[in-house]
Image (cartoon, rainbow, N blue to C red):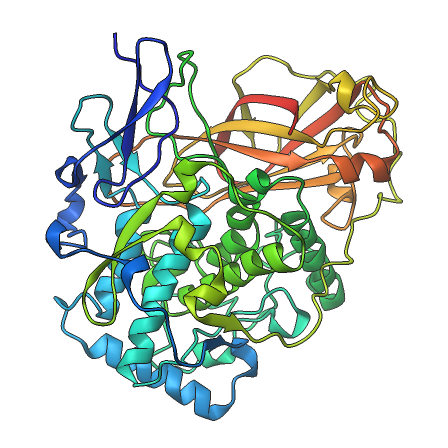
Length: 530
Ligand code: C2O
């Protein structure tokens, strides 16, 4: 019997590469043809990219850019001339006819198609069909880099300026934490009326804390506290142990792995962190008419591209300043997609083409230091530390339902080799892995706390070591029907345990707190060595 392997490369022409097991149980790559990709026509939506396969040109065969690099600048620091250029480029893009693949509408449709479940992989050689999505896996970072690269190239071409770079929303520095004012001018093509009106003139909350009734975070009267919390939140997102934590896991073509166990896609911290918060900040997911709050509409708001320009910059910083690496496996490096370029040519580009922004011909202009780098959270002073959940009834039967106002308390075993003074001399990096099943059309956020006594959950926040982080999901409404999505997140533990001085403990007490959303099914939680 043919078995289908769990993880696959996604190839250009088909967005999916089925891998069939040979007789020995080994996975062999088996590419599917272009015609195996079906676009779901839910609500009459038309997927972009109706090119002829024989017209595709390979990015690597195109001449390398010779002009000066495109320079991406912080959006809140642009001078009037640059704002004028940006506006003119977007104005011209919006004026292109709908059937022009460079038009603003069709560009936004690209995101909708890939991010709101409009593509399905139907392998030619048989095997399960899969709904395709560029989120919740390591495809997130390179796919959005490619998308922005072509989008930026079209903008530059429309104003005849090959040095034009997409300004970034610099939410990782205090001066950049409000929505840049260039997006607030109602007569500008950068404006979008479909935003959360309460938040367009407020400092962003990257932790999306449960707020007072107007949706603002609890520490909002004190901007210093909010800004500080944002920097701690960024620290947790950026200072991770392994590239997999940062980028996420492989793209799974099937729901079951080789052993018949259900696969959870692993979301990376780059996607899960400030990126998701910026979406939710400007688009309240409960208000169906706010673009940024749902991935099917997000790219209709011009600020989407500046949010992603900063996400792309964070990736660049991870590599160049934090010593981060790339994922080593071929399925990732060979993953490829086709985008239209400024000359309306369909161009095939692979992940290995986009690992170095210098080779792509752009750079980020930095305005100063990275204030989050030194923001390592500290143990909370106001709780009875080290007692954890002693005496509290813990839950260990999965799946368990996490509801608002009803935290789940877990006691998890650590592996011998990762404990300080344990078997091996070198401590292995550990992570708390939480597998969940969620509704893809709903917003969800839950927080994970370590060794916090029952009833004291509200006393810890991103500034504290006990706060391991949050899992978030931006809704993906729209396309092919998908009732549930299985996702996993890895919360880094090493620094946190060092700071809490519990590196020798055999067990950890974990509290899961649902902050937003109706409910989340927790399929499993465990401590793993990365
Ligand atoms: Cu494809 Cu910010 O999302």
